[in-house]
Length: 607
Image (cartoon, rainbow, N blue to C red; front, side):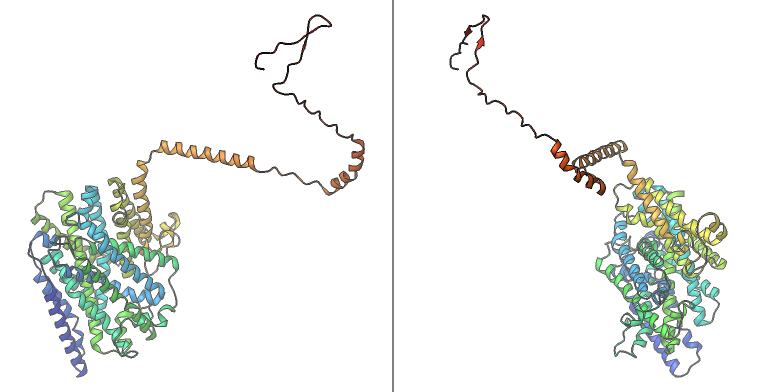
C-alpha cells in the first residue's frame, strides 16, 4: 500500500479549473457565442473525475478493496460528498415542496442517519480491523452471517445504482440533448474505468475532490436569486420564508413517519457510506473531520427549501415535474447560462460519486466476501482483486438490464435500496452489535427475515399485483411516487419499515427467549397469582357489609307498630353481677360427715 494520500492539492486544482471554466462560460454567454459551447461545461467535471481516477490507480489489495491510506480530512470530505447524491439533491426540494415543514423533518432524519453512520456505527466496525462490512459481521457472528451480509449489500446497491444512472442520464439529456440511455452508458463506462484502475481508493478520491464542486453548483443558483431580497448571497433564505411551512401538504402522516424511520436507519447502515471507507488508514479519522463532513452535507441540504419556495413561485409543480424543480430552476427564475450549466455539472458530479462508491463496494462484496470468504478462503490477494474487477463488469451488466426493463421509477428504486439496507442490516448494526445476548443464529435469522420480507414485498407488488391484492392481504395495489402499495398500505419504496420491525423482533426473540428459565418463570407467575388472590380476598373482608335500606311502605308500618311493641315488651332484667370474691381470702368451712358438727379447715403456714 502506498503512503498516506492527501487530497487537498487535487481539490484546489479542480476548483480552480471549474471557476476558470465558469468564467469562460459567462464570457461566451455575454458576447453571444454559439449556445452549444456553454452547454459543454458539464464535460469539465467528467474530465476531472477521469484524471483523478487515473491518478489513484493501484494494484495493491488495500488500495483496491479497502480504500487505501487516505488522510483524515480527505475522509471527511469524502463522507460529505458521498451523502450528496443526485437523488438526495433532487428529493430534498421535492419533499419540502410537497410536505412543507414535514419535508424539513425528512432532511433532519437524513442528517441524523448520516451522523449515526459516521460517529457510531463505522468506528465500532473499524475496531474489528477487517476489510469489509460483511467480514466484520462474519468475524463476530460467523461465516453464514458474512455471506448473507454480502448478499444484502449487493441487493441494496443494485437499485441505488440503477436510480443514480437513470437520473444522471435524464439530467444530461435535458442539458446536452443526448439520448438518456447513451448518457447512462457513457457515465457507467467512465466510472467502470476509474474503479477498475483504482478501486475503492479512486472512489473515495472522487468523492473528496468533486464534493466541493457539487456544493458550489447547488448553492449558486439559489444564492443568485436571494440577491434580489438581500444584499448578501443567502442560499438558505428559504428557511425563513413563510411559504416554506405553509405549503399544501400532500403527504400523509403515516408515510412521513415511515419515511423518517427508513431514512434514519437506512442511511445509518448504507454500506457505501460506512465501510470500508477508512479501514486502511494508519490512524482513526479525527472526530472533528467526521463532524465537518456531516455538517457540510447538512449545510448543502438546507438550501433545498429555497428551491422549493422559489420554484413554486416560478410555476414549477413538484408533483408533475419533480426533476424540473431543480434542473429547470435557473431558466424558470431567469438566471444566466452560468448557474444553469454549473448546476447540471454538479448533479452529474454527484451521480459520479455515488455510482463510483456503490460500484466499488458491491465489487468488493463479490470478490472478497462471497468468493474469498465462502468459495475459496485461501485465495491470494491478486485473485481476489481480479474477481472484484470482474464483479464490477457483472454489476454494470445488471444495472443496464434493470434500466432497460424499466422496473420502476427513480424514486421507487432509491426507496427500495434504502428499505433493503434498513430491513436487513439495521437491526444487526444498531442493536445486535451491542447486545450481549445476541447469538449467531439470531443475527442470521434477523438478516434473513428483514431481507426476505422487503424483497418479497417489492417483487409481489411489482410483478403480481392481482394475486397479492386478492390472496396475500396487500390491500389495493395502486401506483404511487414510491411504487405500488404493498403490505399495510405502505408503498414498496418504504417496505423496509415492515422488515425492520420484524427483523428487530426476531433478533430479540431468538437472542433472549432461549436463555429464559421457563420453569422458574412459571413458578414465579404462580406465586404472584396466589399472592394477588390473597390480597384481593383480604381487601374484601375488610370492606363494610352494606345494609339494604327498607322500602318506604315497610318503614312507615314499622314506625306505626313501634309504640305497641314497646308496651308489650317487658323491661329488661339486669344480669346478675359476679360476686367480689378475693383471690386469696379465707377458705369456706366444709361440713363434717357427722350431722350438726363442723370442723374448721387448717390453714397452711404463711397463708
